[in-house]
Each structure stands twice: as structure tokens, then as C-alpha cells.
Image 1 (cartoon, rainbow, N blue to C red):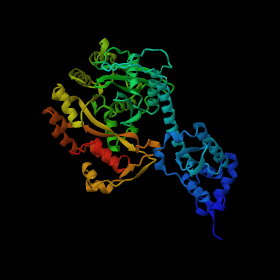
Image 2: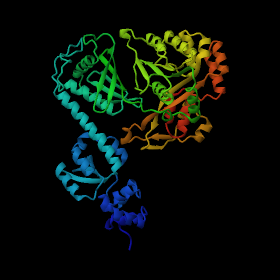
Image 3: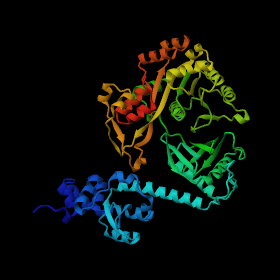
Image 4: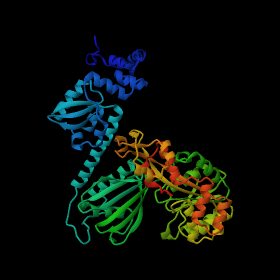
Length: 569
């Protein structure tokens, strides 16, 4: 007699398909009562079965379809909301779509007939079950009900907003932005924007006026994502409230303004750097969120290649000299330098930093934040630092000849100096110092290491898949035939874990230029950028492009990230 899974117990189906052995099944049956779980969940807990295998067995036994994960990328919030969030969590289910006279519902426990009956009564329509794994279900519930909560909160704020006439010329509404009423719609909306940004590990919040609404975007993992679009009628109130909180001039709408807000939320404390600039449609706000908590990065987690890590670790332990990290805004320069300080910190060493602003708090290190409005500039702060008996000094940024000159003097008097500079790569950083006004012989005698860096997005581990690049992509990425042979081309397909982006987190790529005798002589001779690059490459320097390709070969990032973040020489 042939085996019919529809008339068999789940354990029998699992045995028949070879997913588990008889011994493992017997062990699970014994432990099932202690765990308080069903047999399938017990086997998963013991590590004897995967969720995918359980779903396949349930599909054979019950005849239900398995949910396609790509369908979970764009569910209708109105359909999802048919099932209240507490019910969905308790009964491990989520509404997917309306279909004919019923609703398709994904279930992690499809054998629970009581749930199917109660769902029919709750929704008022026939229920068409589909199978879903617990892990995917949990992430899907978290994603969509969070969106529902956010939408509801925005609607709640907007619903209580008293719209009044707008002065077309001034683009401002009559609202008391300084209101202390925590229930005021604009206050509730701004709280929502900031709190959700903190939860999402956002680095920057953009609030900008469009023709018909206000666009709110978060920068997450280096990319901007639109998160909500409140009505344009609330825009002026939002801007005014931000100005009040950051102690800026509410009446000034023609000129850019900068300020900051110190916030303490239930999640963590943050320092918010505020930039307001006028546009043709009204004022735009960009808020940078700086974590005031303990610095958690270590050198080994930043993405260094093994050889580069050895070089960097050796040079940061030198007793004197200048180490400069270069790159654009948001490339992780401050993170690298603070990780370096944390690595070499000890009770015998006096480390002082001068920053604008202090982005990371480091226990046991003296950190000074400049305040130009009261005369505490980089120059004045650094001059006072010299009288504090430092061993190591971090200068937040070399901005002009004055700060560069002070950094040089520090290094020549036996101090180790760390700083940052805006430049495209390591060789151009050297010429940038000379362009600022520093004499070549001073640059050559004080500079120990220049490190250029960028951040590339990492492929989401949950939806990573093989990828075949086009010929044009291979050309644009500057890949050799050998590179193509060695590469594991991967791409994230997009899933609930990565909000359908295909990426999760970022890692650094680095270009380390060690100032040896030959490069030092080239600097003395005027610092020709091309000659410095050629000499560094001959000595084994790995370029930013090389570092990005290396990570692409190992399947950590995509060929498109290589093209986007590096330039082929």
C-alpha cells in the first residue's frame, strides 16, 4: 500500500521524507511534553529539523500552499490590519491578501482548527490558510504592524491639527511652536519622527517641503529611505518646533541656521545636530543623530583586510607622528579614529581630543568640544591642550592652515596626533595638506600614515543569492579576467529582514599609504600626487578599489557597490 501523507501523522511524514531518523523522533516525542511544544517545533528546538523541512512536510500533509517570500515584500496594510496585532502575535498568523470571497492568512500553526474558526468570525470572511515559518512570520509581523502603528500615529497627529490659512509668500502658518502641550499635533509628530529614527539606527533625518506634502526620510546604512509624508500644512509648525528646541531664531527664514538638541529617550540619549536651510518651497531640516552612549566599535570589526590591520595597528602604537584618515562626510572616519584610540588607551597614556562635535564618548579619555560662539575654536582649544601634558592628541578635523600647523607642531614635539581631512584618496590627502599652506618639508617629516576610507553596504544574509553581472558591470567595476574567475558574485534579493533593500549593515574599505623614505622624499620635492601614488602602489598599497573588489569576491558586497563607491584608475 502506497504512503498517503494526508492520512498520516506529521511524525510519519517526516520519517517518510527522511527529514528525521526514528531515534530523533522518539527523543522529540519524549521531550515534547517538557517543552510544551508540538512535535515539529520540538524537533526544530532540538536542532533536528529546519523550518523549511517542517513547512514541506505540512504542505504534503495538509495540502496548504507555502507562502512565497517575495509576496511578503509589499502587503496591503489595510489587509494586514484585519487581524489585530495582539491576536496575530498570540496565534502566529498574518493576513496576506483578499482573494475572492475570503482572505488568505499565513499560519505558523495551521493544525490549530480553533484559530481558523476564530479568524473567520473575527474577519467575517472565509479563511484560506497558507504555511509560513515562525522566523519569517515574526519579522513580517514586526515590519507591517510597526508601519500600521506609525501610520496610525501620524494620522492621529494630523487628525488633531487645526489647519489655518497659509501665507503664500511667507509659507508659515499661525501656530504656537513653543507650546508646552505634549499632545499638540506637531509635537506628537516630531516625537514620532525622532523616536522611530532612533529605533531604526538612523544617522540623519531629512524633513523637506514638497508641493503637496512634507517628505520625511531617514538615512540608514548610507541610503535615504522615505518613511512618511505628512501634509504640507504641518511643515511650518514642524520647522518652528525644531527651531525652538535647538534655540534658533524662529523669525529668520531667509538664512541658514545651525543648532543642536540634547535628547534623552527611552531607548538611549542622543545629541541631535540641526541644520536648517531655506529652499524655494520652504525651509528644509536635516538632523544628524549622534549616540551619546558608550562607544562599542573595535578595530577588528571595522572591515580591515588582515595585512592592512597589521600595518594600522603597528603605526598607531608609534610614540609620535601624524596619522590622518580621509574621506567624505559619513565615510566612518571618526569611528576608525575612536576605535584606534580605544585600542591603544591605557592608564599610562594621557589622551586628549578636540572635536566639533564630540560624536562618541570614550571613558577615560579627555574630550573637548569646541564652541565658536564663545571663542572656543579649534585653535584656542588646541593651544590649551599643549599645557595639559598630552601623549596623544586627536584633532577632529584639519580645516585650515592654523589647525594643520598646530598638528604639525604637536607631532614634532614628540606627540602622536590623529586627525581627519576631506580628500578623495590617500595620495591626494598629502597634496591637500600642502595646498592648505603647510611647507612640504614639515609634511614629510611629521606624516606617518594616511588612510582613505569608504563604507560599502553588506549583503543581507537572509536573502543573499547568486548573481550574474552584465558585461557592462564588469567593465564599469574594472574587473580583470582573474577577478571574474575568483569572484563569488552575490546580490540581496530583498526580504522582510532588510526592508526589501537587499542590504544589512556596512563595512569599511581602506587605502593605507605608509610614509616611507621614498614617499617622504617625493613630499620634500613638492608632493606630486601621481608620483606618490605610483610609489605607494609599488610598495604594495591596496587601493580603495582593490579593497572593495576583495570584499565583493568573498560575497560580502555587490558589484554595484564597487561601481558606486570606488573609481577605477
